[in-house]
Length: 385
Image 1: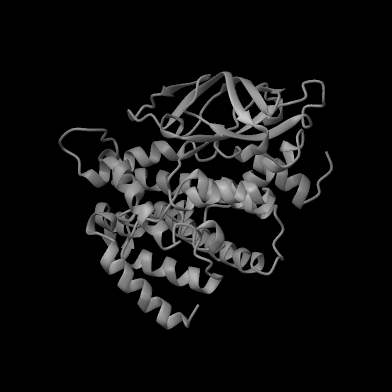
Image 2: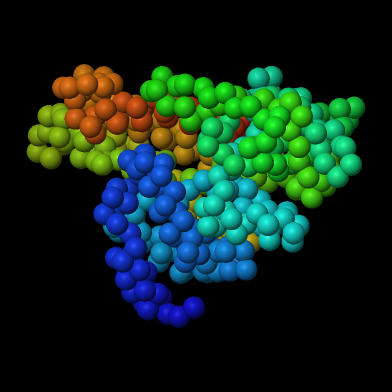
């Protein structure tokens, strides 16, 4: 693999040649979908869309130190990092629990960004109480026939495949009789109805299944044992935040301190408002503490020492920190944070308003903060019910 210094030089040279200026914007939201997809496919040619995955499945085969160098060099030029449900959730779950056949068929296309995945978990009557799901899958020969409905399915309008929780034994207790199934979205029996959000985007959708078909070879884990697979995937979903991630305010053009200095009165290097000054200082300390905790957790995970419940603590903390950060930004901006569209506001101010609204959902998706508190209380603190 070579020394870290030589690898760093290799990464810099490759990025200089292959990472165009329009990719060096720091956050995905500032790219078109087409441009982002092209960039991830370019990374995939080197295995760097999934740098830690084995090379036999299209990954980069890099150890933790070399992955850190790659991440550092990409951040240094604000290259937008690769993302997607395949890379962050399904892929790691298949590496943990998938069959050799499933890994060979599904992981290389994920690394090459050839297929877009979406997640079929929530239903109109099964959100936080996910095990109450009612979408059915009935075995017919070597296929399952799927009937039911999912909601708040991120990316469904553009997805090629879905990883989906289905009920394969309706007579079993609700946490049993569930299977984890993979199947294509572009087939008869799948209807996608986008949900338009307040900002005009359609990231979410309702998905209706009426005779959709899935191969028995695409059941991940045992039939009727999908709840264990689902929990493993949620650990990956809730653990995707990192010290440079959303909790630490990544992607914002200015940090809170710089933003406050620009928009508020400053005297002797301090904000005039002592209460706001204290709130910002507390946020910055908490954010730094969270980043250090996640760094330690990553180091422990590399040697198999981290408890998997860290995912619930991570998800709870970064989502709440993200909301605090955006609340403070709105307080700093005052009336400048009320812009939605049109003249009179800078692009960064309009982006802040939308970011503030988006963070309202951070404590809901991937398991609500209330659910995370319950998990931490029961499984970490061992508080009896």
